[in-house]
Length: 302
Image (cartoon, rainbow, N blue to C red):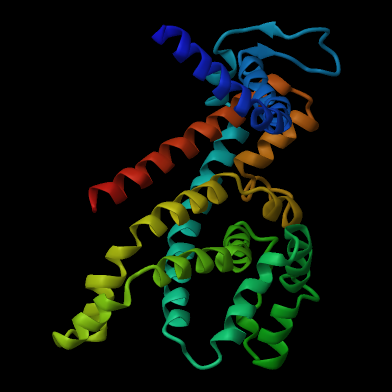
């Protein structure tokens, strides 16, 4: 008798939930078709030799793509450039965005205007911002060189910002920080506003200085923001593509070629989908590993 009652309740519960699953079904179908299937199919291709324009079908070659990847000079150049970009971009944007967020959260004069100015680059399309800075940093008629040489008279500071291997990557990093810092400022400000005001009041009563409140209250209570912002910055660092693609096209030489662009070159120029999938999964492993380290470090400090 109890089993019959339980079965009846189970059927009634499933009947009530069916409309909800029906509404969720299109979303799951979209995820499966446009995310799940490409994800697993690209993993399958990473073990294949497959030029989709000339090969009739993928040919299994095992881990040959992964072995060849580390003997590929252009891949190693792209890997090195991605590391350089990440090592500089990540700490700069994290420290700068946190500093700006703290300043704006303290209600400095004109904070509304500064918030607008900082977030404005975020809404500008990345391709457009790349074209704009390609003009600003141009060697002959760029606005930056004109300002340095003709306005300030500092001719010795004028450089071929995008045409020199010594400055091209730093120019791309600068544009990337300018473009994305507003996003992390918003994330950090949300974390700052979640800190209870009672903590600051109690610390003030106890005689804590502004620096002590910052070190003992503000920074330790932003651990969740560090995780979110850190993972976002890691992803942006490893998968950087539009900035070097538009501003320098990976040049001069291979000095600004990055992994994402090299994946695109192999997939849509050389049509080597197997090798491109291998590089893409290598990038995915890097992102997962760095994100795990970021989460672990913040848990250790908790």
